[in-house]
Amino acid sequence: MVTGMQSRTSAPRTGRPRSAAADAAILAATRAALVELGWSKLTLGDVATRAGVAKTTLYRRWAGKNELVVDAVAALFDELELPDRGSLSADIEGVVLQFAAILARPEAKSGLMAVLAESTRDDALRERIRASVVDRQKRLVVEGRRRAQVRGELPPESDPSAAARTVDLIFDMVAGAVVHRTLVCAEPVTPTWVHDFTRVLLLGLSGAATPEA
Image (cartoon, rainbow, N blue to C red; front, side, top):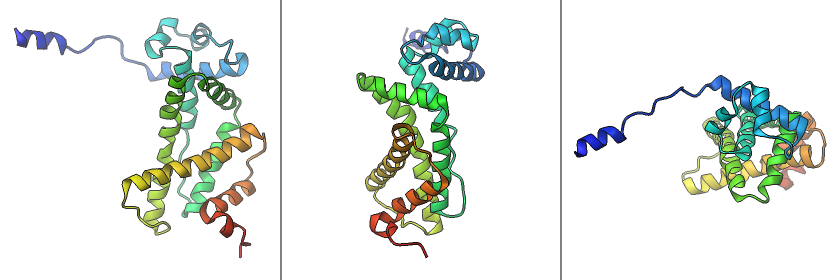
């Protein structure tokens, strides 16, 4: 009796496998709709039409507009890669320039600003942004610090809790500065600005105030 029940409950679910190509088309259509229509006018029906899929396809993947838009924005930031330029400062400059380039794209501006505005009224949306965008991109900080430690540019950190706090702080400083400059102040992120920002990040205010040799 128990064996029979186990075999029924553990039977694998059947159905059409999820298509990566369809997902990519849906997320691209979502970003295009955000640029053209804005958050308030965007509907899942419009996204489905643009992507060339049935509306039910969207509902099988996402519970609603909030989740869909966050994933569409998160996919843009998944394009970020930490370059290996031979030094910690050069690596930071490379990834910051990539980040700024993504934020300069209309679909990134529209999508990120929309979900951030909505998240002020929706705690669940805020948590999804944290999990899908913020926490996912902390991989860049983790990898950058590991690489710098191997090079001998940073000391090893044996306390996992302290290391995690350091990663959070570095991410907040980098992301906060670049988002503020590009989306709040609408100022360009130039190579000179990135170089100066990196000096402040690595040396602190007193060190960065000292002229370079």
